[in-house]
Length: 121
Figure 1 (cartoon, rainbow, N blue to C red):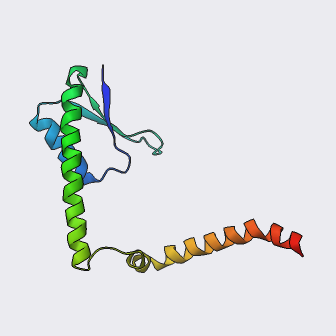
Figure 2 (cartoon, rainbow, N blue to C red):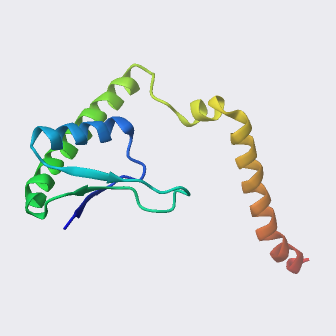
Figure 3 (cartoon, rainbow, N blue to C red):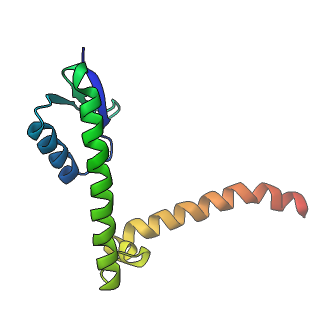
């Protein structure tokens, strides 16, 4: 019977490729399920053979630790070089979306507070 190994929601493509390579290198058979046509199902990576679960989890644990350290080092290097993305960079990349979100937040705050303000007067 198949066993779920990893949930794949919000997993970057490069990480998924590395996981596949690790599983293949260690002779662990896995398969992937998608999020479905509407994206509401849980995409996941599944083991074909239950007896490989402990080995696969140990390999993934080591990989996650190594990847975390590698990504942290890359982030720190970008930060020191002044190339790390900031909030302003994200806003500059898509100013229309930023302004739309800001307007929605302000509208929500207005709608949420008007009844209380009108009660005070």
